[in-house]
Image (tube, rainbow, N blue to C red; front, top):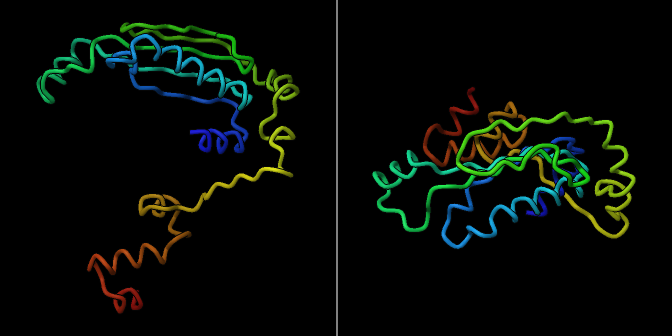
Amino acid sequence: MNGARQALIEDAQHLHAGAWPALSTMSGFEAGADSQIEALMKAHALTGQVFVICASNYVDETCMQWMSSNLGAQELVKRGGGWSAIIHPFCVFLAGPHTGERERLVTAEIDLAQLAAVKVWVDAAGHYKRPEVLSFGVDRRPLWDDDMRLSGGSAGREDVVEKVVENGEVSRQEIRKA
């Protein structure tokens, strides 16, 4: 998801919150899931020049019982998981990582003033972005009906009208009268 990561970098994010599924509870992922999450979160911390707060959920006996009752016996998922940490932009742990199926609060002090030093080394939104060679764009227009309603309907209103007419909810004449 490098495009999504770059969009966050373009927004000059200072703090990134990452939520991960309990990948280490899935058959075949046990040995590598936590190290993959750690590697990806550290990479985002450094390249995005951000502090990262991340958590991976865990699967406990209650969850296993629910899955068994509602989805049938589970062969691909087992108990376990959980990986939480706070990572400095230079990829060191400020808290954690905490692993396991026990809930625990990880805390650390974050000094946003330290971000200036990180940008000296890596500035993915600045000169390292190489704007003379590479271009990156994000379409921030609302795309779905809910997005358009949340944006106050100022963008994409014609598309909403078309969908309403197509669904037979109202006619064009009724819209013109309104």
